[in-house]
Image (cartoon, rainbow, N blue to C red; front, side):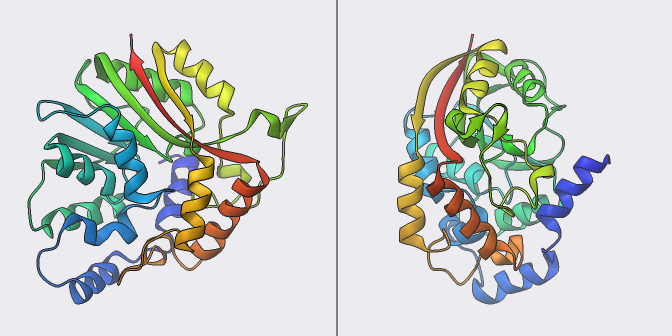
Length: 278
């Protein structure tokens, strides 16, 4: 494991105690549960389940499709796709603890779903060419120093006219002056400090999608919706017996507040996009 991957793994799992969280889940949510019961810990992106559903409705996956959820975390969005569309989904994440918890939650469901979880590096996907109908990337690309390599891999594993669904945080082009980004307050949910953050500018991400064989069909600014959602939900999650701090640790409150500040000051924004392999 190289230093970057080790640091990333430490960022996401450093405050996580898997056995304790499993015990808490068993105590707070005994027996089998609906998938939505775990939203406070497995939907740790801006907009929660609603943002994912809004993006999925634009492509309407079918039962015959196969989807990949990259940087899947505890598997919430992967389960949501399978639950809503009866679609086969593979979730892949670098963090072993997240994969372990994702598998545990899969076994806690009232209605089993066609979701499998794989620990792995998305820059080297263990799948054949043209394998997936669609790929979902939610708040994932900002952890990746080589987005071109990732997009190339996603293009390879998608079938022709396969869809790449993006729900990502980017820096605004206006936030850059002479190549220097407007100040971003850290820590944030994806990085403890600037050295671990690889935010793309909006225009650079568009260029990289085109350069790696994608055609952009949808590109929407979701920042206002994300801010309004954060204002409604406080820390960014619905009331629950579970809490994001159980996953991201005691720094989650500060991370969430800093992300809200960064969105409000305009140094980052949220985009929802659909790109198609050509």
